[in-house]
Image (cartoon, rainbow, N blue to C red; front, side, top):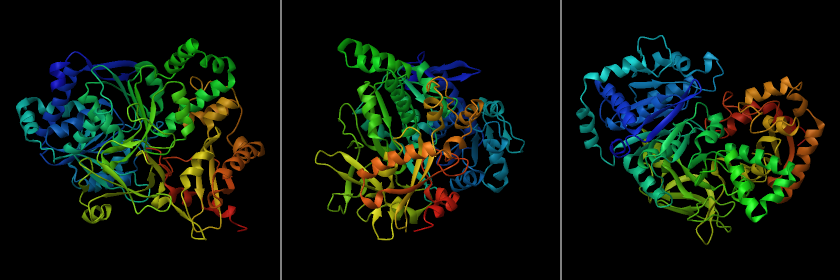
Length: 590
């Protein structure tokens, strides 16, 4: 409300329709969201209850999210790529009576991948659902479905005071959001995060960096993720920023080139893609490499390069949710792109450690603690142990899961993250593995897979690397190829302008150029290139963690095959199951 009063004419949120930008200023965005809140009240949405949102990012998503809070309730986001079974679980487990339904921009026109189709297939099994609110352009033939226009008309007779009265009754301890864990090792759980949790997180971030009215932010990470909810659902409003909503997560850098954000967040894969294209350019053009070393020309060239990727106005870029190759950070810093690594989880209301211009950074570290406290539980001789945290940013528990909540905390109240790490003498945190992902070989040695996998993926043609070795004599690896790198490095396409962002379209482009992916996955030359790289990186790891054999898979790992989470984290048990024959073949003579 204060943004509408203080910055009413400033841009609040923008998105594209038919290729053209549409913008709401803060006054318009306020009114739009108030109308959503009033319609929810008219339909009987109560204080203290939850509603579900099943869609990729769009203005209706964020308005429904904010409106749920304004009505004294909470939002429960569902990833747009979630299967019908996952949708049914979250809707039922969150006790939602209302669900907003939008689109999956990666459905490729396949009805079976559309949010509306997937929900429809299980809707009659979601007993508590009373209304399905369809976002603009979404169709569903079901008695409980209501169009966006009809929904917005519901609240026409509800006075603003009904909403503002509810806002006035909100307490810091009230639930603001249910964030569902990624489910990499089992069924997802709903983290109960309060308004107070979010306020503490934002206040801590503001101690590091504060943005101002009109400064840009690109919303492309799924809004159901805690990383995006802190940035798009909270900082955007607190700092009166101008948020541009991507039509697809694959278009983030394209949107950045137009919107020039001041804040850019992302998971490692997007930064690795930017790094790969920039490095390829620098490797090919000696004149640029030389020019970057010259005092005046170097500054000019850095500005040109940053503008090429849309980061010329970026004052803080953050990577998190998975490990990133330090070489990516080094190149970004060399080009004056302020990319820093952070660490946190849904249970902690996003980040607890971060690198920043203020805190400094160390390559390989995820920064220093900036909110609450962290400790290393029962450190070994190397100072490594489980990372644990506590503070006012930490969730109260998992929704309706008292036993799992009890298991998540120590007797003295520290959250058990399940991650392994160490702290150096200056307080920088280093992640060394994840307890549930440790490989226990036949000799009883525990092997963290991430360091070896990260080193393997440093070779441009490698897309994914999954280390295998649990209850085995030695480690092997499943490797996929990066089709974008093949198109760029083998066929000379410009990585930024000519290589499609969509993995399916990349394979299609490869076919159009007269090649098949199998020409590379079955190539002895490619295999020799990867083997040579593995021979080098194996020297950096102890014997048990070295890759003895590897198999190049015929396709990339995919969300569609349930091998990746919506935020592209590996589901190791699923990968092992899907490629069991390939794994067994590597141990045939063991």
